[in-house]
Figure 1 (cartoon, rainbow, N blue to C red):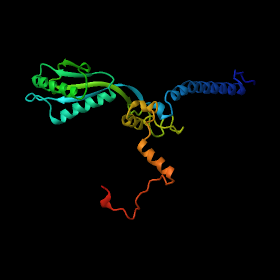
Figure 2 (cartoon, rainbow, N blue to C red):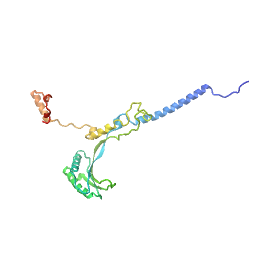
Figure 3 (cartoon, rainbow, N blue to C red):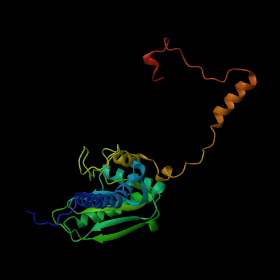
Figure 4 (spheres, helix red, strand yellow):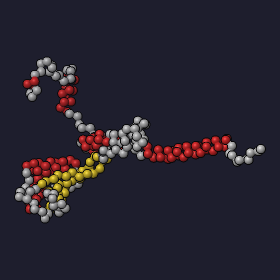
Length: 249
């Protein structure tokens, strides 16, 4: 007795179909990785100086003078703040000084008396009258005490903001650079921010300063000793003969 024929796909053909499906899946995955990885890695530089650059830009320096309703004029610390601001304005100011005066406030009259003393202090420090502008403002929040604000623009260096953690620090699917031994995103940000705050002038980050003249009196003494054949080195007292009481002499 003959068995009925059934249509079956040969084993080799099934194996070929499974292999083709696996290759297609691998190609799709590899194509997705090839499309996403360069964009993700190229968007964040590895060097912290490029990831958190120090920007040189113009910013404001502000001094706040609080004035009570029952007293006009400046206190001794406030007068020192205004005088110090005038001195730094000569060094780093890139524009005039703007004085914001409160109006229609309980301390408006006392603020007017303080304004006259502020203007006199600035003039005594060498700030020309044309370099000072006065403008009025009305406080938006009555809970805050209205104060006199002195502001001038200057060149400033800044970096940041810091404290951003877009990825995990440990091994995780959200931290693609962990196994590549790359620094985390916030690495070096605080150092850049502190360096920008400590630099004496922002231009020092871009170019060196010009050399200052040599100290002529000390140079003349060294040349005179050289001509006489005397050692030009400085002689210091011996350590065993030095006394603590001689430190202030």
